[in-house]
Length: 171
Image (cartoon, rainbow, N blue to C red; front, side):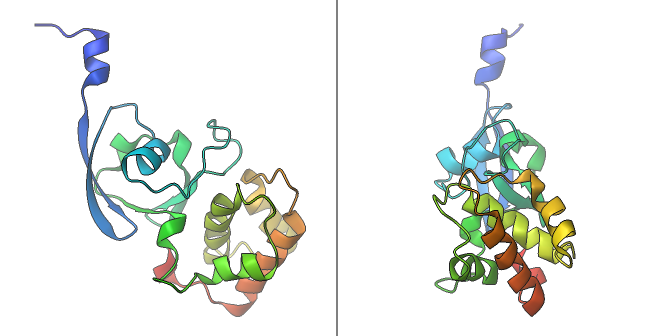
């Protein structure tokens, strides 16, 4: 018996993930992106669908501690991996140091890109790319802000890098 292309695309795969520290089992079509699964199936709407082409960084999350563009990542490729979203950075009511720094430095205007900016900023500090302004801007260049809050974003990232408040546990 052969299956048609339409029947194949309706089939779903079972994928096990750890999302924000919690084991999750999701049934997804083979072509489902991580961004769509997070937003539509798991109700985690913090990651934003900006360009949906991997060019704006609004959908940035961490997979096993590395920044990933969730709009370009197929969920089916992540079996058993750990995903952290902006919702997973805070420790209960206590904001992550980078979230606090963005507020303290007014590093957002409309806020649409802010979750992706914060996720990339945490990775920037964690990987040691926030030591100099040029290195920091280069690392963050994949995250676009339509409101041009870049000077405040740089100040926020530098403030966290200077305090050493980003821990391994945060990624």
